[in-house]
Length: 51
Image (cartoon, rainbow, N blue to C red; front, side):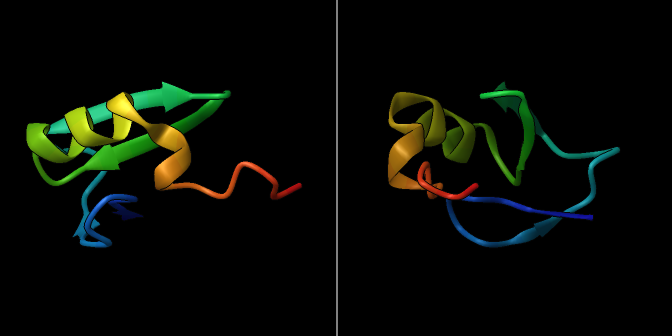
């Protein structure tokens, strides 16, 4: 299971409607809408300062 970084919904990696890779990390989404929001501005949804 993975957490959609946009809406924080739990999604199954095998059946998630959306998926993208950003900065070498995989992200899974509950919908294509959440995926599009993430891809428009990933920094809004993830902590880019985390090590």
